[in-house]
Image (cartoon, rainbow, N blue to C red; front, side, top):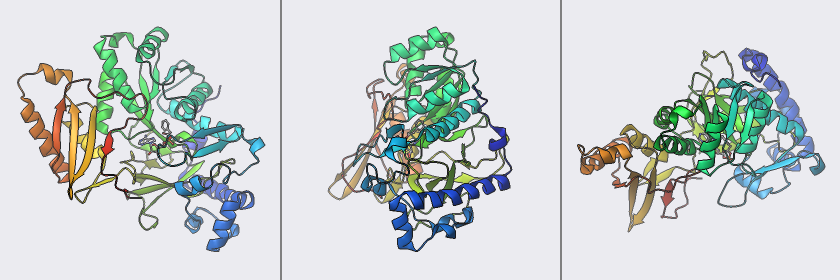
Length: 436
Ligand code: DLL
């Protein structure tokens, strides 16, 4: 089993890294032009020839590719190799429209698992660890990706998949799980279950690798407290490979993008203009090593910022901030741009847990924002603060965050269904077509 902290790559001086990216990009552009008719047509239409791309400074000359393109090309339109050279498919969890199917050669799987192994090493994982993976297995990339990474590091891997909390806790206790991999909402649920059963001292967890959905810093603190661990963020998407496209190091201050494989850009989602480092915009990725499903300038719809600031862990790979939401998650309520994560931040700041639901409706011409949140058991026990005050504080907090008034209601603990994978927290009854 290898050492998947790869300092010769992960701490490479930025100029060398960019040289490597340029070489790989030039090769990759020629590769997709030669192997994927879709790209050849797009580039021909735009009058761009492969030889016009001489390095990363020419990336902007290439066309973007969107989720709609992937859907139009479903299933084989973007394949860069004959189907017989593919060994795996994975698929997005999308609930609307056609699913996106991504293909992998064995080498693509190796790169992906390497990235996940690096993520596990970055949180202190070694072959002495017991890595408990309760992301879903199957078409979703979470389980297979972290599972493969865990094998590469040499951890004892528990391929738990999601759900069945009793069984999760039993294995966690009996087998001494030390690293937990799941969605942050499921980590919060496991923390709740462990504390309810008074079994925290029987759990050996030290770190968690949580991603696949947005989560706030407040939620990180709550999870760290309830599980007694350090909680690290991991990001990725099926189209680009899966988890491990970027991940946090011990600094917990942004996720290092695996730049030897993926080149990130931030663009203005409305105009497509590339934005300077530090500005918030839509994240775009170009894969420079993938062969079966080679995406160039793929628009993720995730909104975040990039930072080249030196990280004290020694890694030189650029960091991305936590995605603040997706451009298509953004709701326009009473003319104001609202991301669910902003409401979550207010709830958690005021001592609530991330057990909430947001309902948006339109009565006549007026938008109505309703936030329902569970009281915590501690709040129920504490009679000194009246619920009316808790509601008033939340209404004021949301007003000050968003500038709009919400109707807030408090629910009894455990009334909102717990999620085992990605949580669904917003119900928009207006059926509007949101920002594309
Ligand atoms: O969610 C891959 C993954 C699995 C990532 C396990 C991390 C851990 P998809 O189902 O294709 O793939 O969904 C990708 O999920 O575009 C983001 O909107 C969101 N997402 C993923 N990671 C994060 C994160 C997996 N750390 C979509 N924070 C992405 C916020 C995230 N959003």
